[in-house]
Length: 252
Length: 260
Image 1 (cartoon, rainbow over the protein chains, first blue to last red):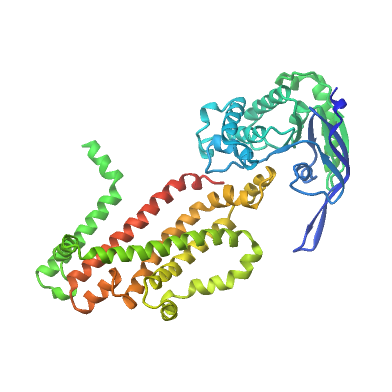
Image 2 (image 1 turned 30 degrees about the horizontal axis):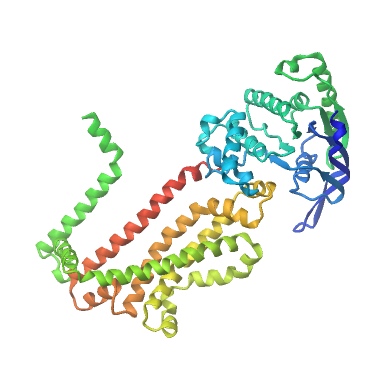
């Protein structure tokens, strides 16, 4: 069904090489990435550390340009960074409107839109708090809300729950699932947590170690809507074992 | 009793400070009263206070106060305005920083008084001479603090701005300026003191009006009480200005401390 709309994101033989002019050293981060992502898909990217997951995401967000090959992204993107990266001098509301403010949307419109998103992530009572008054989980909700507020077609998430404790992480995963099912947005989610990758995904991309190439694309045909119970099923365990084997082969 | 103790505990520094100050004033008064030191050298707290009151009662101080404050405020505002703008630009653009670094270092290390004769050649004995001296004294602390504020910005925050498509101007406005504000305010506080010194020095040498002029003219005519009364005014103005900026600094600290 989603495929009728055509690919939203397509990589064609994309490669990325970093060049350090001071050390005169080039490092190949990504090699020959070819991939299509369709509207409404939730794609998670896993791989051993240093495999270029974040680089791939930054390419999608237009923060880095690929060295070779093609990358097209239809529609607006927004990045949810690993560290919440909230502006410490702004309140929750001030942080959430930030993206729209940069994109020069009218002030009155911005405020009401921001309040809706803040409500969506469950922070309505905290809209006038500053980041230093918030817990790690709350900061990440603001981080997410800030990206959602710009109404992107594609959300790029870079290990957004990495620094959260296990409980908060599970709750946030559930919330993200709810948000993705409500809106028809495309999600690209980078993580090193295999559990998380499976639970969220329609499609898991497993990257090899540096330079990152696509090792396997795994379709996750688990039923939706998903709840945390899913993690205890045999089907889930089977996928988990498979992904784990792929990654551990890379590390050893 | 408990409440009083608690009050004393919470204001301990202030109470000790006031005690120290009173001790100093009493010693000073006694020294003058008992003629330990001749009044021409140290006057006395009572005499100085009396002179301050007289200055305000007969309004003789007002024109001097007005001219000094005008010089200071004009020079300081210009220094703040240009110091912040250039500080952000130089802090942001690496090439510009390389280009100007030695020049800024040299000028910052030059005591303004060393180039006073040159300024007089340019501008004569006009009020603008003093405005320029205040400007030169205050400009560099503001410039240098703003620069280091911008250099120390969290580069991830800049990436965040870029991810939403912010151009340089938007990054300056929404990240560089507010992010370096605590540094800027520190620069302003340092600049107040330096600017006041600049103002006084300018008036010492090239003026027939203003607080600095009064200080030299009372000093050279041995009117110690009047001399100290003017000094006291200068001190009060300095305290007021630095405290105002200090309040602003404290307000900004709340998020600065918690910054990652």
